[in-house]
Length: 612
Image (cartoon, rainbow, N blue to C red):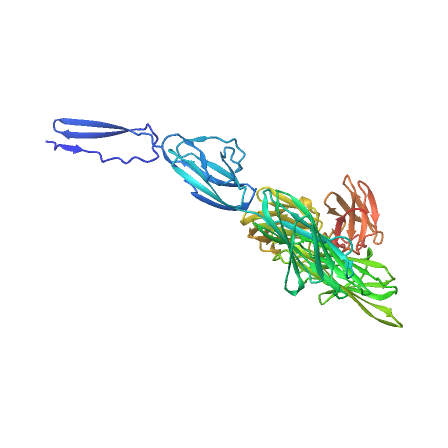
């Protein structure tokens, strides 16, 4: 006899991802001697709406008037297609503009047409881009609302900053004066922002050598200070982008000693901070026999940039000055380029020793002047403090019946290095140069900068180097970035990868960008090995060198549509040879070994240069 038994089904746990409408059948069986009985139960999966939104909060910093975009991922975690509304909320007291779009084209930019909702299949996902443009400084909050029942939120918190007002101060007219003379200064205040700057405070503390007269264009107050100084102040609200110009008038006090240098700066303060006029405005109360003034081509320079200093030395006396020498003491952070020193446009042999640049000027006729110019390169990093240069002249001049030493006043000029290139502070800068000495580091006066070299940054950005071989990328994403030098943009071969640890291959590097990061590209000098025949490939042409008889030089044939010029040997002594297009010319390059010798011969370094 068959024993009866009952087969029961255990409870079913359905997967959350089971599509809505799916039919699940459950069968129960009873069996004994009399037969078998089945019982069937059918379960239909109901639609479930569920979603996730990540991240829940994003914090960003920006500048007033600059847009910020944050990405959020919306995923349909339910089992049925669903339409999710898109909405934004922001506090009523905020003045920021804000939008939300679905990244339908997938490029990560908020350039799609705005939509009020998105429809997603089960497990489908889409990136939502929330953008806001703060109109005032402070903290701005924008909340994205979506979900099956508008129950999902994500908050974008943006801290907006505003810069300080700009200010400059210059001396009107002659910078030398006498006791009792009026000195007129031009004070220019600017609002570089796209929003109003209310109640900007302009202050100027006058030297004890000056007596305040008036500020033309403003109702200013003058307050005496200890030590004989005078605080002059006035207030002004500035519209977006507005520029205001004032004239401050002062008189040189009668007790001021000769050869006094009177230095003044002005300060403008707004809710974004303060700025001081740089460089200072300087006048000199002067009766000495030599007068020196100094100026700089640019007062504020990007990291690694170059500036030109001009020192003017004047002999105001009725006697001739002899053995005149300018002694200039540049800030030790500056890199002086001695080969750029000129007196009245003519190159001179200056010396740089012990931090002092000595420039021979020679003889100065009565009431004549000489202009001394030279270039310096600024460091790649700085703390925002001005870099100062001070110059003084010495000479021998007749005083009565004897020749005596004559000294000048001390003239200075300041230049300020910008703290960073961009608001985020994550910037990549560097130099492309021909590494003549082979040490993988730029050596001034030896290595040669390469202008118009093309540097590529992963993500599609590119930059061209300037005349000093410098390039920069602002607002680089912090972290590991790939950088490459376009080999088609330089007529040189990149240095081997082992020259620096960040180079994975010649001309290709991965660099960790944090704050201001420096990455240089050293290049190998062009050196041509010549045997029975060899090619020299330049940036825009190809030339074949073939040796003639042992003392007859070389035949050079060109296969380019345009000719080129090549410098043989190191600059500046190297000789420039013109290589015409499509013809063969003979040029007296160094003689090779006898023609039977097939091994390569080293010629001097060659570099393609602009034709004179």
